[in-house]
Length: 298
Image (cartoon, rainbow, N blue to C red; front, side, top):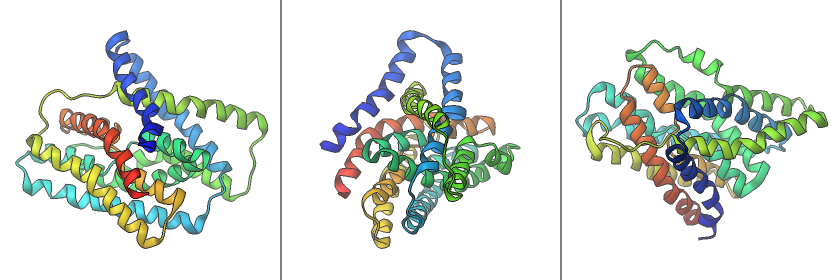
């Protein structure tokens, strides 16, 4: 109950985003602009600021990254079984497959910050930054036959990956931020989480029926929100992870699907409507499952 109450303000921001979209009628242009602001400016500033100044325990961070990677591979393997378990078109499967393992970085950073402050942001930034290439390789690879998006071009211009790499490099070189620069980045970081969660809420869609029906959707949701966290707990305990790094590994595995999965499906000629449904359902369900996993694992 304590963890659920601690995370409640962040989940309320997601619901507020959906309410504002309905009530204020600001239009798609406003929300698309907000998403771009968060994705290209605010969250990169948050990641760089946290990683550049963090005191990272590299000996423990490596098992954290490996735990996240193995948990995500578990999601890929189970998600891949849907091709044979449920009747759906190859395009629909290729689109929905990514919903079994892709993760919402905005929510991950918000939850990690709530539980562990700046250290949580740094650890989550490290975990998500390391996982983005693998997630994109799997998602783009499955959809590649339906579009001409270049995987390496996508990675090279991903602002979250670039900010993570820049922050880690700055940290490893032992550089320090000048006070005005640190304050500037800090102001941007303060706005990142609230606006990011509002943007997540504004994108919620639960109209129609996903390809393969609700049984297939249930399989993808169970893989993402139940199987991946369970795998992460098992693997993290084998590595002896505790405290901050255990929590971050579990939070990462229990995150709902990223909204960027819809953008990728649309851009590559996939089944965007089914992906939008799964993103929305996983986000709403994670408001219950994520606090439960954190409470159960402690």
